[in-house]
Length: 114
Image 1 (cartoon, rainbow, N blue to C red):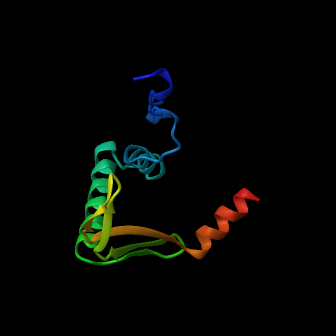
Image 2 (cartoon, rainbow, N blue to C red; image 1 turned 135 degrees about the horizontal axis):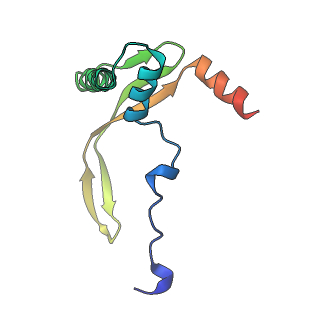
């Protein structure tokens, strides 16, 4: 592989601006006196499992003032093989989750950037 074609190294996780389950659990401990670290982790895991199960059951998840997690079904459709454009294939149907921000969150984010 030539030097020009080398892939750039992946950005380390510590440099990304991501709020993790572990950070959420630590914030719960800090905000709720009497709540232990393991209890907060268990709470976060139960909430994530419940959200996952609701989506698997075909439900949308709505948090007032924050936003909605919506299940979006993409229909199957015909496609083409990019390496051989004459070859057609069927792209299977897929279910995606889309986050639709609530009005108050949208206003707060826009106010923060201006």
